Length: 141
Image 1 (tube, rainbow, N blue to C red):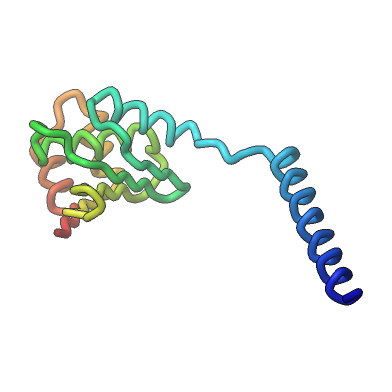
Image 2: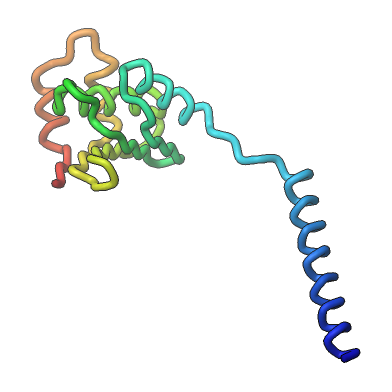
């Protein structure tokens, strides 16, 4: 009988120690924060009516996952998302835009950030800029 009490006591000490460590971790480790680029891109998409998009900006790429709002044109929305991503993180190499229908990915478009910036930053993009962007885009369904 004494062995069971010691085992229970040891288990209780372990549980209390785990709780103390967990509370200490939460108290002293700051929560992760969104990067300014993530916040800028999320805000830009939200102001365009694309709510609850998932955005992830790293040093070399941008990934945007979204659900196409009702009544939005797919091609125009894809270019809008590409442009917003390029403006938020112009230093990246690649932008990937994934459109979802519920939990299912419907399509993925990937483009070079530089090609998108050539369109976004120009007052009057040339047909050659549009051709280069479309020629280098990778579209998957």
